[in-house]
Image (cartoon, rainbow over all chains, first blue to last red; front, top):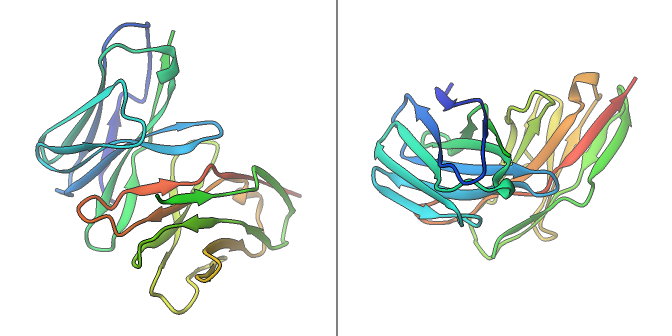
Length: 112
Length: 116
């Protein structure tokens, strides 16, 4: 078990407010990823990290920023939430030992 | 650019029968990996099976097998003896030879319904 925790599990926020989602892992994995899941689109990569302070954009990064100041935490921030960012957000880690990927339980975000 | 295509938005299968979920991929990488994940209605992403591009034999995990046809760029998931608990969304995904990133890209998924 990769020990990956996402918080919060559910959040409702208003348009224009900032929101931060947290992904926490307990096993010092180097690679961490944020995805969003929307009907008809599968999971799409928002941002990823390959080490402390090393991050890069994915295919749907507009409106999102990330930070990784510690190995165990990868934060996703919506600077000014919009209704189009209503989605389920998944964090994932890549396990170096077997090249597998493990996902967190997801955060359901609703922007009203 | 890498791409995963799942052309079956939804499928039905009778309990105890086998079902094949289609997945085709596009990549120019020589080394890559293919994954299948199951997402039940509870929402978690469950890893099912993995196939490496250099693996000569098709991967199998219990009732799951991956029908890997490299020349056709297909990686279909076969579920044998379907069970009611197999009803879920299934995603095909690919990891490319992406250097430091090794990102997973996903198809749009297939919703499988197993009927008694």
